[in-house]
Image (cartoon, rainbow, N blue to C red):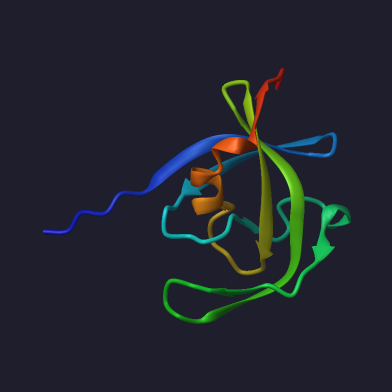
Length: 111
């Protein structure tokens, strides 16, 4: 028998001086952190030519990225970058970059 689990977490995403409250899916199978396009204002987007293969082996169209954001939970923040995915049905996916980069801890901050 195979049992799958989906781990969701409420996070604060800090971009420049703006704060966004999101529910993130923690996915150890995702090679990149992904953010649904339109969640944050486009003024923070940067052009990107990344290619991402989805779980069903189809390419996802990536036009933009967010290279510098902070993921905060319980007064601890982590530096993170994201690709922005147009037709994603989850607001945020935290993948292996988030799970494996222990160097990214910024420390306790007031959030």
